[in-house]
Length: 434
Ligand code: ADP
Ligand code: MG
Image (spheres, protein in one colour):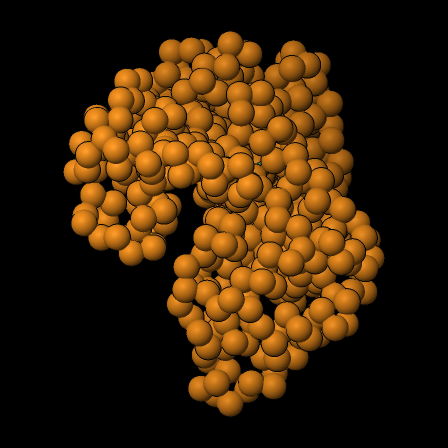
């Protein structure tokens, strides 16, 4: 008998023996890899599956196998995650794991998602969408979307050329190309593509050589009507140390933001990730996790991983509230509810504008400090519990009239500067994040 046939018979017997839910969760994902006279090797997708097989189904499988083949064999269970991660596509550097299919759409990423899909589906770039500029905080799915665009595009247009890179890789390759005198090969690589995807362009800040090269790459692609998609943790206007002509290029298409996932999206993401781990988790427990892990999707994934781990240790696939609490206790600890004080606001504003700590309470009155300082005053007034002007002024080592003037100036400016509104909203999100 062939391996496939043997395993098929074993599976048929197992289906008679155990409940449908258990069968679907634990037996279905099992693949038989090889068989010898003494041993059968089985492969499962995750560690938790292996644990379940070893603890609950081992002897059952053993006896079914013996019944089918009339021979006693030992069973080896390996985890495929460790064995065969899907390889990254060499030519395009695209990671096949990141697709639109496994990306959860929600209010927080809707605009970016729709724009990304539009770009991925279109066979030539619409001027209005070129470049598509995806921006937002860390762990919110920008890299995932970038790969998804490339993968989807290649599916539709298999003959086209797609290239994924990061600003750091681009810079590194450029420097190597100059050193090894392979500039032309470098240029060809980046200028002869139909779709160029560059991740984390904020790291071009201060790298003049790379910016120069990027500028020409951009122009070459534009001239040929090729699509460019960029990601960044902030808007072009807020990337420091970047040439004006690059900033203009970055801003000339469609900027689309990704926000931290709101409650419903967190629920949906958690459910989808738990399901792909074959875990049975009640809605109230998913809700518990969604209420306690908020800042970004990477952390939600971390929570799921921890729950898988704990489920494995406890040899169960029924996740109780107790187990979930235990599993994510550390994660919850790292998100202490910090009390919002003027100091917290000041330090978040400094971080956002990439200013050295202490700049806002210093005596400095240069332009790069004055606006952030007034923004911080405005935010104090907007979100603190008891924001009197003398109190705000005091936090900045200034008097109440300076605080009043600062808040007033921002309020006026907000009227005709939507970018400022975006910036302030983003800072407030950062402040409330943890
Ligand atoms: P960023 O590049 O914005 O820092 P990533 O794209 O690296 O974030 O996302 C972090 C992790 O979260 C990745 O594993 C990604 O697959 C996952 N992720 C982010 N957003 C979503 C989403 N909406 N649906 C499913 N998975 C997501
Ligand atoms: Mg990223």
